[in-house]
Length: 266
Image (cartoon, rainbow, N blue to C red; front, side, top):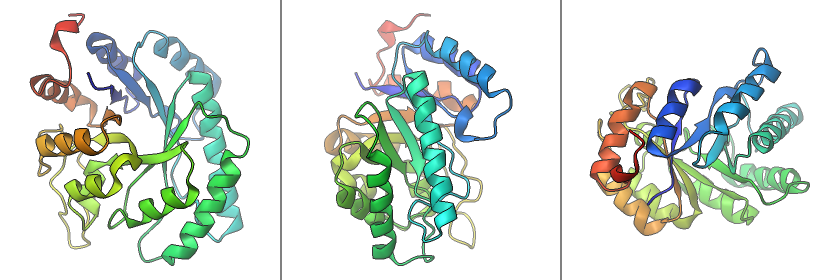
């Protein structure tokens, strides 16, 4: 069966129960806020809760105002610091993936120069890291897959892969979700699965980013998952819907035989 995880959306206890019930892994999102109160207590609680989850574990890193290909030295250093902060937490929680954002905004920087600086950033970041964690770059506002392809290929390190967020691709890009999958291929190590109604405003992107159940919205989830199996069969699927839509999404994955209903703890 597929390796499938659930995004905790900050609802750790509720989502952890679902993970235990359905034998799934978890993506931790609490620490994408680098200024979390009672940090030590929160970290210890996560250690206790995650110890009872048998599936894989991943962490979402901070992303606000960061840009790893920036020309601004201060922003670059803050980005490096935040990625190292996330890496330390991921190690503590025994996560095997960290999801990060590029911070690239289309039209704000020349592609090749940005990729060159991003490549140097990643080489510096990986210089003192082992191979226990894969860094997964999530698409956000990119118009298409070109930047991620250039970045992954330029860095050429097995510890750097793509997290394809199909909802972001549907809402924010000019490329069909299906084409993102076929063009990126096995560069995709990880998926964020959720649905929405695509571009819904005059600016050309969905300001709500609805995070609906995976079968609700304009994404053809059946076709998307078929292509995922064909082009990146080893990729991890993380269901990143709002918490209230997780069970509906799990049910659909059961109906499509990606989750084995016979192994449930109900």
